[in-house]
Image (tube, rainbow, N blue to C red; front, side):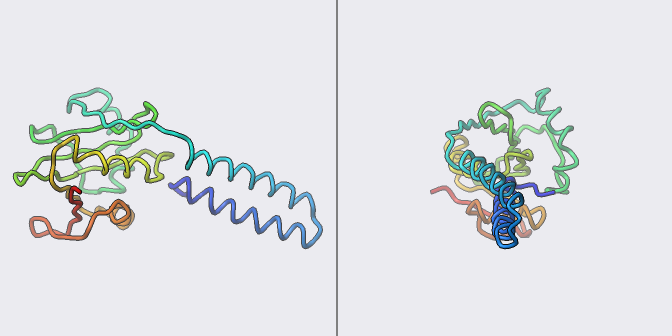
Length: 186
């Protein structure tokens, strides 16, 4: 039921360590052995998550792209869960970026340019299985160069999205009279 794979692996690893200790204390060696195997598997995948070289790319796509329409339709329910007010519009001042992770369209950034050379992020969505903050760190490190924007703004959406924005370095502010978050270029 957890959406973050890193948290899942860490919690599973912690539980397995406790069960190893429990199995050894009560001399139930099969319990200790099985949980030792679980620890090895969790260590392997955590190592893989943190040490394996991955390749990212920000790819601008047209607002009439078949892939974009399919992606939005397929993930509609989950997108509404994170950003309930989101609606897609193909107006001229809007830009859509797929975030490719090892050539997989793992995320989507949907923005519009404001008159003050800033971008408002209407949607920052990453598919399950890729929600380990690596995409967000890559995007927010490189999006200023890609778009030449001076600031990025986003509304919080819900508590999880607000927490994510803070982890990415956004600071609480106000935009057009509404609570928002802002990230300034370095």
